Image 1 (cartoon, rainbow, N blue to C red):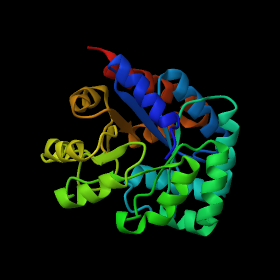
Image 2: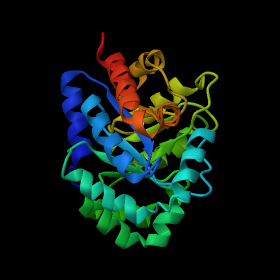
Image 3: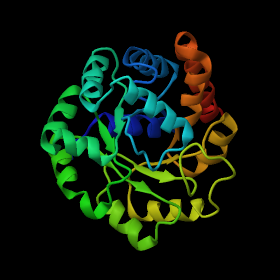
Length: 267
């Protein structure tokens, strides 16, 4: 796969000895215009990569917070084509790397070739597909490689060393390391196997490693930063949007992103 914005951002951060902050929002929640403002606001607040969740009716990896946001976006008529068009508009205003997190069904319905072609042309840099096993990823991986669209895999605390080897061999962009067993947004301590899993992944790839699931506060960011190259924060941001309401969401999210990024850069 050719060099893209994700690769360049991680190289720049590494040269400065910094870790990346990757915030997540559900695209279309509360609406597409607010999503655009949220992305631009998070970029201004220091987000290094931004993950846009594609609403889906059966989001198995997501907890209640993101499920509710996803359902609200679907009720508003949001679909993958509109999100790709949103990325094209955002690309005119920001160079921050944009990653789509989508279950496989919306991509399949779109058509793999059409989706990869249009998404890459719009300015999507990466793709996370939680329900696409590595054994079935080759068609999408090959299309992505041809267009510079990174297919970013997930590694779970339960992943065996053998499975990690298979996943790492096909990883692009960075590897998403899940910090706990279960769904997004769940708190109650990170997996005791996290350090071991991170070590196993490090041994198999030179790609950056990002930790996500259950990270909500600056203290948790500081706790996990030594293990990874990036921290992903999702449910905490979606909760801020819900609590602040449409008019206050952008400011509330900017404030949280600023706090989280400061926790990563302060020594």
